[in-house]
Image (tube, rainbow, N blue to C red; front, top):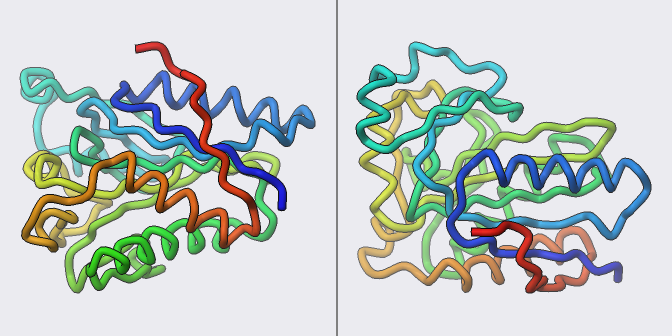
Length: 222
C-alpha cells in the first residue's frame, strides 16, 4: 500500500500551519504525490471564520478577544465560526480526493468517532449538523477546502476541558448547542495528544488503504 506521512507539529499558531497546508497542496498539484500528508496540531487560541461565517456569531468585541489572547482569522475552510486552542487536537489531511468531498469529510469524521469509541466514548459522525457528536453535544467540528480535488483543513477534536470555556465567546458553527470533550465524557485524564495522533493516523490510513508513516521532520519552526 502507498505510504501516507503524518506529523504532529506540537503547539503552533493558525496561519503558519495554514501556509504549510497550502504549500503541500501546491506540491501535490504539481505532481508530487509524496507531498500528501496528515498534519496534527494544537493551535494557539484562535477564532476562525469559515467561508459562510456570520460575524454576529463572534460574541465579544475584538479588544476583549485580544485581552484574552485570542486571535481572529478569516479562513478558506467551509463552515461558520469555530474556536481552536490548547487542549484541542486539529487534524489536517492534505490529500488528493479519491472520491467526492462528502466521502472525504465522512471518512475523517467516522475515523475520529472510531478512535473515540476505542476509548469508551459513544460518539457518532452526523452529516446534519456536520460533526462528531456525543448525544446532543459536539465533540469535533469539521471544515475543509478543496481545490482541483486536493483537500486542506479538516477536523478539530476537543480533548481536555481547557478549550470549552472559550466556546462561550462564539456561537459554535452557528448552532446554539453544547460542546463537550474527551475529558468530560471520560471523567478522567484523556490520552496524550501524540497517542491520539497515532491512533487517528492509523485509522485514517486503513480507510484509505494507505500505510501510515510517521514523519519526524520538523515542518514548522517553533
